[in-house]
Image 1 (cartoon, helix red, strand yellow):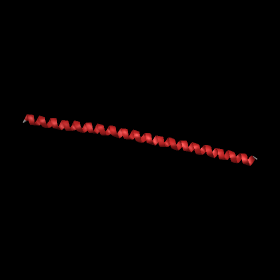
Image 2 (cartoon, rainbow, N blue to C red; image 1 turned 180 degrees about the vertical axis):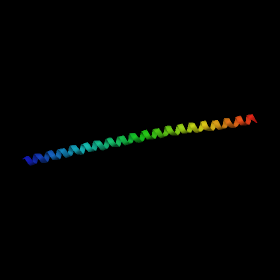
Image 3 (cartoon, rainbow, N blue to C red; image 1 turned 90 degrees about the vertical axis):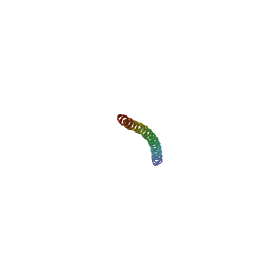
Length: 72
């Protein structure tokens, strides 16, 4: 009778461990998805900022060119 009880306890512990690992994997998957989403948003913001900087530089060079033409 004792060995049967021990086997049942061992089986129950294994099942609990399996469930715990499953939850951990699911959580890791959610974290990875969230991380990727944050990274994507960050990259998007960087692109927008770079685009604005590029536009500003272009405008500056155009105005400088006009000023030099006005001097002549």
